[in-house]
Every structure is written in C-alpha cells, then in structure tokens.
Image 1: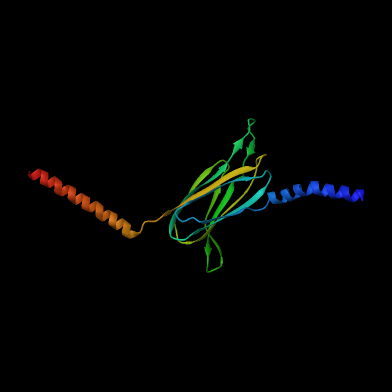
Image 2: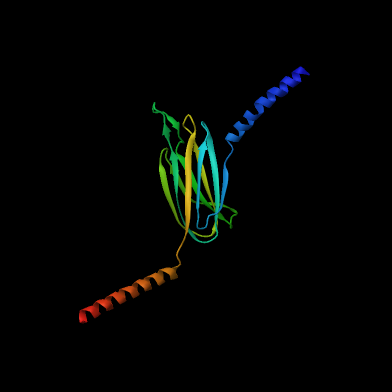
Amino acid sequence: MKTLNKNLIKIAIVAPFVFTAGMANAALVEDFGDVTLSTFSHEQHVLAATNFSDEYLFQITDTQLVVGTLANWQVTNRNGTNALAIKDMNVKFSEWDAGTSDWSERNNWNVATGATFYYDEKILPANNYRIDVVGETIGTDGGNYYINGTASAVPEPSTYALMLGGLGLVGFMARRRKANLAVS
C-alpha cells in the first residue's frame, strides 16, 4: 500500500509538467471574428527550441482595404547571443475558396529574424481569411512575433464622382469670383 501511495504522489507531481510540455508545442488558433472597419492584433511568445505553426482566422462581411504589420522581433544578450529570436518566419495569407472547399493562397512572405514587414493586401472582397505563421526558434529563451491588421472601408465610385464634382464647383465659383473682382 505504501508503494502505491508513493507512486500516486510521483504521478501527481510529474503529471502537470508532462501536460504543460505537451501544450507548449500545440498550434495556436485564434479567431479575430468579423474585422470589418476594425483592427486586429496579436503578440505571440514561442517557447525555446520549438517549431511552431499558428493560425489566425478572420472574416470580412463587406469589401475592405486590409493593411498590417508582421514583426519578427529579436533580442540579444550582452554577450551578443540571440536570447529571443525566431529563425526566418514564413507567413501565408489565404482566403476560403467555396468552389474547392479549401483555403487558396493569396500571398506568402518570409520575415527575417529581427525584421518588420508591412503588408498591403489591397482590396479584399467579403470572405473568410486565414493567416498561417510558421517558424522555428533559435533563441535560448524562445522568440516573439507580432501580427496586426486594419480593415477600412473602400469608397464607392459614386463617392469619387461626387467629390470631383464638388471640387469642380468650388473651382468654378473661385474663377467666377476672380472675374467679378477684375471687372469692378
């Protein structure tokens, strides 16, 4: 009975560490939801000596302009070694293809260690989108990366026409006023 109790105590002490180690390599999946006219961002710390693959999902319900930043941060120790770094990170931007019932790649970027990359996906139609971030840590303390994006409305062609018409009207009025001042 004593041996059984000792073994149960050992299991109780070791189990949380085994569970935590298993969770450390689990892929992160985060759903930003509908990002129409909003901002999404996430900073992620990846553990040391780890290959990682994270996935970010978001939806756009109306045509939007999406721009953002991908940063692969690097921190070095006083002795010059990489304490916090991710080897060249690969980021894939995909959209849902209803025809094939799968994700189709729109863009693919490599973000070097210590680099910041600004992406401009131009105008995106209403759809579901996914950003996959894949990499490997090279730092002794793991690594950090940051991903963000902003969705903003795209003006309709009629908005541009109205703006140009207004500018033309202001120009016409200024010219007419200048002509009246010259006459008097």
